Image 1 (spheres, helix red, strand yellow):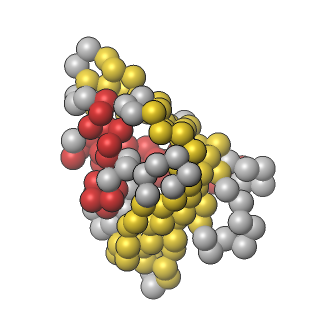
Image 2: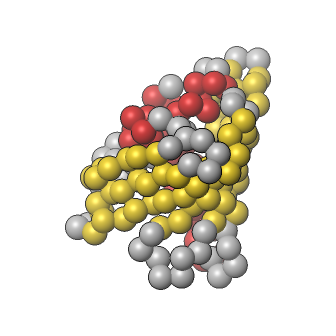
Length: 138
């Protein structure tokens, strides 16, 4: 689980997770880690999908998923996987955003399939870094 405090509206934080331009500033790209954005596309509706392709150390990595719940501005759920992973295992990301006095608080939970226990800490650190970056740019 990762959390973030934002001094802006829940709507702005929620919308950032659905806007490819914003995603390219806080989830992917050279401002977040040593990588190049190849393409960021999404269809932000329940049943819609996304594909976020980056190049890291010469290798293209396609982060894909499907939106399963979109309840603006407080709740977003999507599946998450790396297309190149042989297992094809999908994880699930749950984002809850609650208003607070001077903005909002975001709680992100990444539910990993069994067999991925070794990546739990790495995932927490990665999402924490992304939320820190989002805090900076909003």
